[in-house]
Every structure is written in C-alpha cells, then in structure tokens.
Length: 238
Image (cartoon, rainbow, N blue to C red; front, side, top):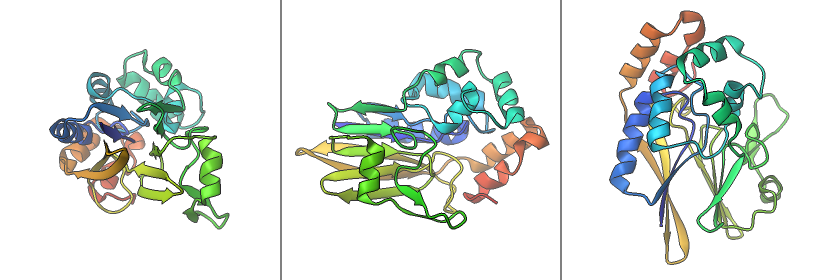
C-alpha cells in the first residue's frame, strides 16, 4: 500500500501543480490532504479547483478555520479570498474533521494535532519567546488521544520532521508552500507499507516560483500581498 500525503498548500496553485505531477509518477493507492488549503495569494481559486479535482482536503487546517469563519482575525485577507473562491468553500472546510484514520486504523492524519489544528503535535513551546523543543513521547501520546495505530502524519509547522519511539512513527510532511528552511521547494510524503512495516519517504519538488511570485505582484492588492512573493522566492519568511 502506498499513500501520498500533502499539506499546507496555502493557495499556491503553482506548487500544487508540480507536486500533483510528482505524485502521479509515484502511482499511490490513495492521496490525502492535511489542510491549510487556500489561505494564501498565489492563485487560490485555481489551487482550490486543483484540490477538489485531485487532492480533496481530508482534515481541517487552522487557516481553514479562518476561511470558514470558525476563527476570527485577518478579515481583509479573508474577504478577498471569499471573493476569489466558490461560495460553498467555507461550509465545506468547516465540515472537515480534525483527524482521520486510514489504512485500517494504522495511520492517523491531522493538520496540527488530532485534537486541535492550531496545536503543533511534534513541537512544544518552551515559554522563552518563540523557542520550541521537540515534544516528548508522553506529550505526543497525550496529543494523539489514545491512538493505537502505527503512524501519524501532520503538517502545520512547515517543517519536515520524523520521530520514532516505542513502535510509533510520527511524521511532519513539510509544507507545499511558505517554506521555512530557505529551500523554495514544495514538499509531500510517500508512505509505503511493505512486509507489515511503514516506510517514510520525504519528497521535494521544484516548481515555477517566479511565476507564483509574479502572479501575486500583478493580481493581489499590495495591502494583502504583504511579503508573500518574497517569502516564496526565498523559501523563508522575510
């Protein structure tokens, strides 16, 4: 069994196109989308249409809650997005679960943690500014809510991560868009079940970053575009 998992598209149709092509070449048995679908300004309408056709969201991301109105804040960007997207998108996103178990219960999917898309599963704030540390095994178990399977895959923090302890494999798939490591490459993960074990393969895909940035600079009002074009070009928030 081969499962393709992507996360954090953030309305970047250009990155999504390249990743979908790479996923097709891998011929997975199923494709899952961990949310944060359209909260971004690199042609979010086309990004949504591509997701509907090829990678429907499986779980609700934290910024999906902003789009749906479940979470307040950043009203100007939300208003612009709603003007770009089909009218049913907020209701669709609001109805998504916070986690989904697949592969006979062996694999759990979530955006942040299974109990809250705003909570990082694999990182814990230290209370010292923006500093974080890897979550302990006890913290992972608490956030997973009694999960008795073998693999959990999340997104949210925009960092590729892998942790294995006491038979539990926990993976952060990394971001499709808005990278944090200085590499402007779109990310996804391939899980392969072989001989009763799950293998994890991190995939990185080059895409037309300049086209994405140009779309922002020509199509999006300056007060909404912010620094996202520079962010995509650098693969790191300015």
